Image (cartoon, rainbow, N blue to C red; front, side, top):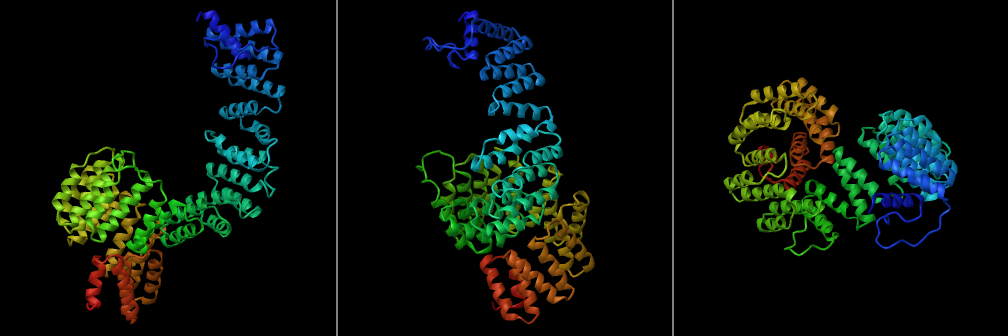
Length: 578
């Protein structure tokens, strides 16, 4: 197409004479009469020629003048586009405001104004445009728009001012029962972005006070739970007492898992299963929790229920990638089959996983199967030969091989590999910690203590090191005040961790404070039914004269993990007939 013809076509599009996308059509478009006169059409053509030649300023001026004369939304929008192309926010704002004056109800014009003001950090001018964004909306449309407003401010630098501006714009909605919960939640989201957690909590509380069954304050409170605002949990729990959405109950369950409150998280999954049995993800999370707390039989049932709710499996020869949830379910089911002494079933489950990003995880599970069959060398070879597709795969392979050696009591070889790992990954606290733990298993408590103290000095927030050192001192019955101090320090970082609570109980037990030791262990065991915690609780009960209760707890521990070293040693020492 000749240059002049092309410019005429573009001008026609801008003027609205032909539809967008038709400028180069072979067949002529149907003739559409326009209100534009020849002078305006010529002016638009000149504007487009200016834009084509790189003179956006002249193009903008001519187009905006034409838009005012023709009172055309399409021309106003073109003027805004030309100003933005010229990187002139002031010109773009001038055109958008002129557009809005000509068409006061135009949502497009108002959104341009919002975007330009936010992009130039002119936050103090946003109140009225924000109000206009909500003008004329009611019911779900208004609530939905209120919920979206915080997204407009994602790149704003002054988050505190942005929160205040949004609150001012929503002033009419904040006290209302119908819109107040969403409005306060939007303000709360902005306050979180500004780092004002107390203010965000106040917003969640105000929104929930207007309607305890509203979803938005509950979601805001969930986010605050993640941000370490414990008082937010009361809002979530009050919401969950009503007709709660399963997605929010699921979010609460995940927050409980993050806080290591596993028994409570399991209860939430069970409630979802009862209220909405076809909510698949709850069965997956339930199975993941049950594999530790309720045993493999319960977990297997839940995981199979999850898989039954997914779309039907493809043909086994189909290379469609397995979904993330299904991968997790198959891995857990393979682990259960392995625990039940069914290696062939475990292998069959692993073969169902078609996921390149999970290839290493599958290899690890297969290596575990080989090790359980007494083929430790083959297992190690499988891990070492596994392809490395992701950046961290080399580290994962090394960590997996070390864990296999530890699981099968090859501590000297594990120590050698860990020494290499610490040298290769000097910033990896996990390897440094594991080296200390293996040193203890090799009967080198002084080396373990040295390594842990170095780790604490390097990473003062690595609470596992405080706990391990404190527990080791308590288990050996030495320097008990220091052991208590170390474990209490660990609890500052993870106050609900049942294993750290178990360690503190062991200090009390070694100090002769049996009632407090029993209380703490019962608290830990209620939070996490673990074989090692069961061993300690049983011993405290046994020494306290509660031998029937001790035996019962040990039996539960054996059901959870029959080969747990601490549990086996405790039973053999105190009640070998069990």
